[in-house]
Amino acid sequence: MNVVIIGCGVVGAAIAYELSQVKGLNITVFDKNPPAQGSTSAALGVLMGVISHKIKGKAWQMRQSSIQRYETLIPELEAITGRKIPFNRQGIVMLLSEDAEHPLESGVEVMKEWEQLREVRKSQGWQLAVWDNEQLQKFCPQINHPKIIGAVYSPQDRQLNPTALTLALVDAAQRNGVNFKFGVSVLSSPTPSSQLLPAVIEQLKSIETSEGKVTADWFIVAAGLGSTPLTAQFNQKVNIRPVLGQALYLSVGRILGNADFQPVITGNDVHLVPMGSGDYWVGATVEFPNDGDEIPPNKELLEFVKAQAIAFCPDLATAKILRTWSGLRPRPEGRPAPVIDKLPGFSNVLLATGHYRNGVLLAPATALAIREMISSSDSR
Image 1 (tube, helix red, strand yellow):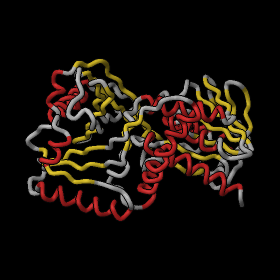
Image 2 (image 1 turned 90 degrees about the vertical axis):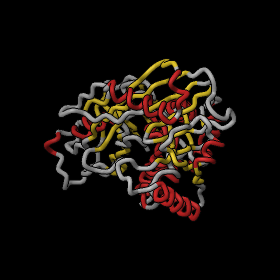
Image 3 (image 1 turned 180 degrees about the vertical axis):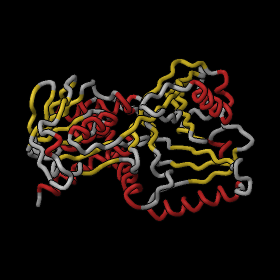
Image 4 (image 1 turned 180 degrees about the horizontal axis):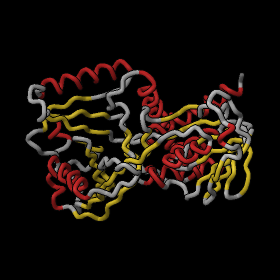
């Protein structure tokens, strides 16, 4: 059975690797760019699963599934490929502060909410610790701000290098027989869009690429922002808009806090990601497009992110900025992220796109969901 995957960011690569373990599938991946471009290259790789506020339904199940899978996936890929995937197993520390906009919501209330989540996670088999300021100072002495009242520590959440992960997924999938075609564009669907009506369930037979016509039994659209023009060709446009993120790579010249405890630290939606040897990523902004899809990077917002990081970690004030980057994340318009479903009107076109800020976090769960959709359809 032939499967075509369109897009080779972290989601497309994860699907390719997952499906490569299913017997009888002949898999080809198309991407007009090399792997791990686009949103994947613009991600900090912070996996906020246990520490998220999602506690039930699909949103929590996918997070839980991914966090569990990463524990086996990283060593599995490293063993198969011989590649090293930077994987921070020291968890995530989320700083808590009193709400300046709602002074009636005291620190006691803030702490109470997190203690409730801690109990929910405990019942689900996960750990969370709620620290007061004294405990925070003990573990993370580099943090110093008068408004901070404590922190939540999630020891089972992780951070990884999304590009290294994606390249390892591609390498492992290739070893399992997956054919990757980079520099090849998907041009169109051969069926005139006027013939495709939402009420009629079609079986897509083939697509046109810059290398000619390609036939398959299944087509999986994992093209991020490229999913919009692709689905528009099928007369079933899935509207995914870009959201810009900017980040800074800083060098302090020394490791901050306890050298043997370097978790990701996050406060007010700003992440401080340790990279070893006294280097840190700080990010990221969230910038929406104007009326078109243009988003010029806003220097003031990047300065604000830097100022926020310095506010809770004053030692960053003397850091050197080694580089900055920006990238676009795919956010579905008018519907929740991500979009993992059949394309309306088609029985064999699957969508795995629009993950917004959670592409890296949800890639393993997305791959498992796509595998299940193909397996359950074929068993009928």
